[in-house]
Image (cartoon, rainbow, N blue to C red; front, side):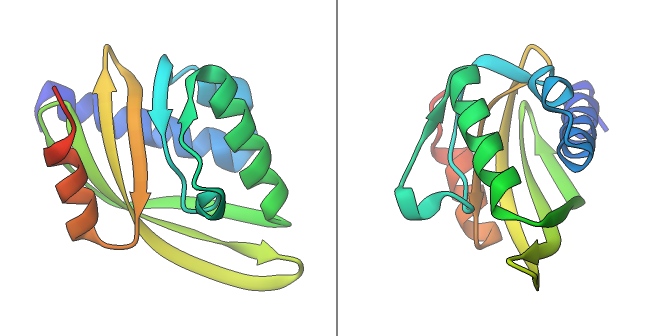
Length: 134
């Protein structure tokens, strides 16, 4: 795997380990200050989150939406400084077990996530990485 591939894999592992541990500071350490992203968990609001303040808002929403949750990267494919990852979240919401597999488009800049978005299909995630400006 190329250097950007290694960086993307490492950043993904650190980010999801931090989310699973509830460690906001560790998560923030792998996120660029000017990050921009969307989330399927908060998609009903149609929100685009920006910067570390947006990360905090998103973090509070996803942590509050689940009684418990575990995120897992199932696979990641890298192209330059961008990747598409298949991700699974399993947990409980209001006591009801749930599991969802989704696709995440990710862009890394200087070792940190600078952009990401979640999608329901691999095709949508691939199209997103191809349409993002350089």
